[in-house]
Length: 113
Image (cartoon, helix red, strand yellow):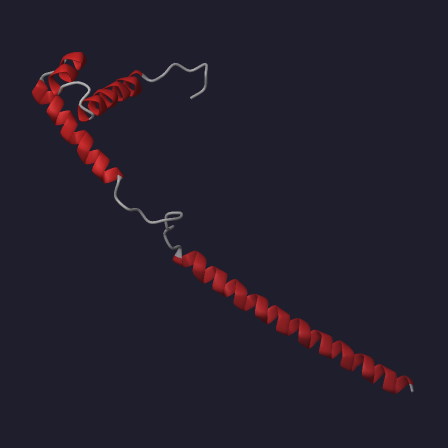
């Protein structure tokens, strides 16, 4: 976060809630104390705790390594194949043109001899 920007109040509140949740899990404070500090009921605290644990488990799932796969662009793939085919054709035509030039040079050298 840039130093000239104030922290987001929602972010600060979420961090405070998370810190209290960790303190309860570590046995430093009770759920009742955390609820009191947050100004909520114990029942609400336990609902938040359940959400936090669900999110934590979700974050701990294995994920595929590397970059996420990008969706296939079928039209782009077809165009790329077509370009490769055209490049091969150009190479073949260049070879043919070179052969014609060489033959023309041979014919000229025969006539001049």
